[in-house]
Each structure stands twice: as structure tokens, then as C-alpha cells.
Amino acid sequence: MKNLIKISLLLGLVVSLNVNAESGDKLDRQLCSICHGIGGNTTSEQFPMLAGQNAIYFTNQMKAFREKSRANLNATRFMWGISSRLTDEEIDKLAAYYEAQTPVHSGKITDKARYDQGKALFTTGDQSRGILACAACHGEKAQGNASIPRLGGQHEEYLKKQLKVFYGNDRPAAAAMHEIVKALTDKDVEALAQYLQAQ
Image (cartoon, one colour):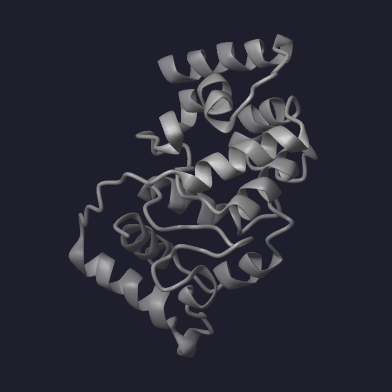
């Protein structure tokens, strides 16, 4: 509850703030770190890790927030307001800054059986159910590539939440993911999230 109050205060500040930052790290401190952590390394499972995220993917997502075409719950609560105050140049500065940061994560495995199941789904998929290997697009270490997001090291709860977002229409730019998640069960989602958080 305290975090939500802080975030609400931040959003109020953003509305009146004329952001004139000189660098991505300054923008990070002014606008992003309260939710995403300094340098994009958040300890909150509610928000994504931005450290090490691919710049092109980051830029595309920020513009989707700004255009209100990405409409999942946290987007409408937080990101629509923040992104509306950012210019293309400021988004590019943030994208370059976060891509250059080193992700810090626990790499913990809390359920080895689930981890192994997630690893199998990620690396080879399941042809019998029409599930493609996630690694084909996201890379063998879940590092992503250009417009494809880095998933490795994201928090387990955040990953589960986002995979379930793809069941709906709140992320229209990710049409491929809408099709892929249709074949995933809740257990598959939990297994993938367990595997990815440890990468």
C-alpha cells in the first residue's frame, strides 16, 4: 500500500514536471527508479527489470504506452502518464542507458522439477501440443534480440502476470505471443517463469 501511495505521488509530480534531463541515468533517477529500481534493477515482483533490456524493445514499449496501445493494468495505472511526458529523444536516452546496465538477480531455483519443465518448454517446446521453443525467438539464454525482449532474470511473479496478459487483447503489437500462449496451461506458465527468473 505504501508503494502505491508513493507511486501515486510520483505520477502527480510527473504531470507538473517539465523533464529536461541530460542523460538516461538522470531520467532513471527522476522518473523510473521508484518502481524499477536504480539502474533498472527492481526488487519488486510487480514491475519488470529494465537493466539489460534491449533498447529497440524498450523504445517500442515506451511508445506503445505513450500511444495508449499497450493497455494492461500497470500500463494504464502508471506508464501512460509517465510516458506521455517523454520525448522520443528522452525515450532513446533511457533505452540506451538501460541496455548498458548489468541485470542483478538472485538466479534462485525454488522448485527444481518446475524449473526443469520450464527449461524443456523454453529450449525445445512441445510439438505434441503445438508449443514452439521460446529460445527460437528469445535466444538460448533468454537474452532477446533487438525488438524481442530479454526475459532472463525477470521476476517470477511478473513473468507469470505478463504471460497471462497475452491471453487478452491488451498488447496488440504482440500478435505472435497471443497465439503461442493459447497452448500454455497455468502449470506451463509457472514452469516457464520459474526457469526464466533463474537465467
